[in-house]
Every structure is written in structure tokens, then in C-alpha cells.
Image 1: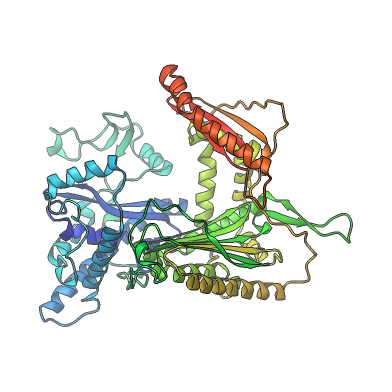
Image 2: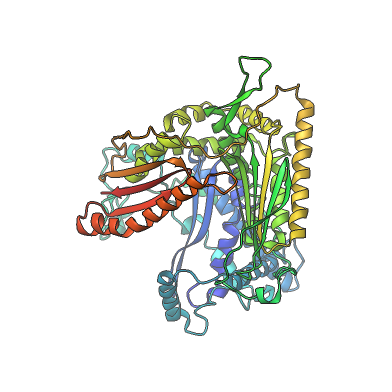
Length: 630
């Protein structure tokens, strides 16, 4: 259905609806139940006369135990979409008006508008991927529309392929689908079901076919798998509309750009791309004791996009305050592995909690992330500049919300359970699933840049983590009197807009800190300290060797990483580093550049000691590094 005319493909609309992550979607219902961490929808296969539509779901442990409920939500949503299409057709035929008769047309119009924006604002990718994609598109759609096919350039609410959408959606039913499960529990169920049994044909008429229920081995890769019938009780439940959760079509997207105009402060010559123009450094336009604003108006790319980064520079992200032996002395900050893990949980819970509410921003070309580092917490937002500041202010307001009812805070039990499941699973499988060169870098980093004791220590803390621990850490962040806010706003944004954003940001942070500090008893005096990246200085003139065996049973390769560390700290700017640091950093960078190609030719091409060979420069204490996977 999508091959001949991708702009009119019903699967494009159904991919948008089933894959939506906003309120009322299958993702939202299943995430709220603590069953899933992600969901995607789209064509698995697409040909001239057929399509195989796939909905993929990543389950939590709780979701795996209730996988039948997960599948039911998908079929419930399919029935709801069918009803919406039928209501629209009935309304347009002059029948009784029903709720949602225009919703599908509005959604189609929104999706087409977003597709057009992406088409006009996205630059071609790398030649080696762009050229074959265009060649394939020419063979399908011809030279006239080979670049624009699927971009909805001529689509609007009146062009919705309503009948085709309904016909396709009516096929999303239990009798026309198969369910693939990939998990230890699913495998154990199949082993128990077919233990000691021979493969059985589906029916007597199938004797001439190779198909049979039971255990099979994939032809090319030798992977074992099971095929089994679906329990009739599950099928009957999936076919009924009973116990439907609160599902509805997506609401209007409030993040679609209202304007794609370039900043009025740009001179006329800067309103066309000038890639050859040197990049100018950002300007420090606000410099206060508790906050700084760096700003740069883009005058090279002529794109209606911006990026803002907010760094809450605080020692509380990874450290605990410790009293000094002398009561008259300031308290000091010491690294604390549990605090660091609590902050990791905090950022992950926030991302999980805001996934539904900010999914529309993702569809509208905006992206965001919240991360934790030794420097503090970093909130980054990027995309079309028109709605960017609205998104950033909303996210910061939600992250700084430290009190209120259970409905207002993002620190909910369901998000905590999902986060804990994801982190614990990742830590458990890390050492046993990574490539040899990745593990070599892990042990190198453990020696040079980690203050913790590695994966196993983190796993123990993650398994015993409680939601109350994370909530306490969230409160603790805002008690730091020495917190400094660094904001970098660049792109299609004027200085006035950047300064206004800075003022709003500082108002949110100061309001939160004042409220938290009022509720706290008087705190001890801390030593003023601005946290940042950390690296150990190795003993000069001594060689340190680390040897380890991979815990990955399927890893047949080995790896060698050789690191040469300078005893002079890496150059961080004139105000922070010496002239010697500048010269040393420049020399090591030049050396890395000089040896990169000869090193690859010698180790990879001539001696063939490894199939991945690289060399590069590292910052902080300058070092040159050689990595080889063999």
C-alpha cells in the first residue's frame, strides 16, 4: 500500500498513530502501567502489493509477565482508530455527527505539515548513503518526485486516504497477525511446552508443508526458535472491547513552529548560507556570581534553529558534604557513589516521566536531554527556534518542582520501577555483552577518570535503591549555596531573546532554592568549590599494565589500548591554563595527527594485527592513545 504513492500511504498515518507516545496512546497506557520502556510502529516489509506492519515494544519485567495485556492494548487502539474512521465517513455522508469525526483529518494535516518542514529544512546526508537512496527512489517513483516522495508536499486535511486507512486498520486483528516474543521467560515457556515432543503440523492438510509447531533452527545463522499457537482464551480476550483503557487520538501539537523566519538581527548577507565564514566564539553577555550567559547568533548556516544548554553546576550531583575535624573550618565535599547513582536515577526518571508530555516536541523537530556529570546537571534543548525556549522553560520548571501532590511531581513509583528495571538490566549485562575494545576502555576509564569502583558496585546500589532515596537527592540539589548556572544559547536567537531566557531561568532556580532552604534547618558552611571533570595523574616515569579476561562468552576478539599521559594538564583556555599547557597540548595534538595514518597503515594494512585501529588525543591531562581490536 505504501509503494506506489508514499504520500497517500495509510501505513504512514497508522505508524504515526500507533507509534505516538503522547497521552491517550498505547505507549502512554502501557508506560503508566509500568509495562514498557519504548514502542515503535511502521512497515517491517513493504512491496508493490503488500505491507507487513509491525509494532515493536520493549518490555519491563512486569510487562513480560503481562505480555497478553500489552497485546490487548494494541488491538484496543486499533478498534478505536477504526471507529474514528467510521465516524468520519458517517459524518461526511450526512449521518449523525459523532465525536472525533474531524480528528483524523486534523492529524493527517498536522503530520503533512511536519513532513513538509522536515523536507525543506533538512540537508542531504552523506553522499555514500544519499546516492543509493535516491537511486532506489528513482526506480520506484521516477525522477520528478524521487526526492520529495513521502514528504507530503501536496497533502492536507482534504487528501486523507480515509477508506484505505480504514481497510488497512481493519486488518489489525488477532486472526491476521503473529506475535514475536524475545525473552528468557518466553524461551522457558516454550521449552516446557515442547519438552520431549516432536514438532507437530498445524493440521492434517499441512502434511506437505515444512511448517510445524515446535522448535526450529534458522537456516542462515543457526539460531534456534519456537513456533507455537496462541492460546484461544487470549485471542478471545483480544477480540473483545471489554476492559479497554483510556485511549484516544493525539491532541493538537502545540510545538509546531509558528514561524521559520530568521532572526531580525541578522544582516542581509547572513540570511544565506556562508559555510566558508570562520566561526566566531560566543560572547559572555551576563556575568553574575550565581549565573552566566554565553550567546552567539548564528551567521553561517541561515537555519531557523537554535540550541540552548543549561548547566546547573553543583557538587551535589556526585558528592556529599563532610564536616572537617576543626569545627571552625568549612565543610568539604567528598565523592559518594550512592549519591552519584541517585542522580543517575533522577535524570532517568525525569526522562521517562516527561516522555509522554514532550513527544509532540519531538515530532515538531525539537529534542532534549537531561544528564548528570561530575560538573552537575545539564539540560540541553535543540531544534526550531520558534518554540525552543518554551520547551526549555517547561522542562526546567518540571525538574525544579520539588513539592506538591503526587499528581504534580515527576517522581512517581511507576517511573521509578521502569527506571530501576532498565538500569539494573543494563548493569547486569554490561560486562558480559560488550566488545573487547569497549571493555578495555572501561577499565582504562576506571583507572583514570572514575571515582567509583565500577559496574558491580553500581549494580549493588541500583538493586537496593528506593524512590525515597531519589526524592531526597532531588531536594538536596537545591540546597547548594554554591550552585552556579551556566547557559549557552546559540543559533537563530537574538541577544534580547537570550537575555530574557536567562532571566526566566534564574527566576525559576532562585524561587525553587528559596523555597527549599526555607524548609531546611541551617546548614553548615561549605568550602566554595566549582566541580568539573576529573582525571588521575599517573606516576611519572612508571608504566601501568591492566590485563583482563572478557566476560562475554561470544567475544572471540582481543583488544589493546596504549595511553601516553602528559604530566602537564591539558589546555582549557588562557584564564585557566599556563603557556606551557598550551604548548604541550598543541604538540600532542600535532603528534596524534602525524601518527594517525602511518599507525593505521602499519598495524591494520601491513601487519594486519587488528581490524579496528585508531589513535586520538584526549583532554584534561593531555594524552595520546592508540587502540587496536584484533
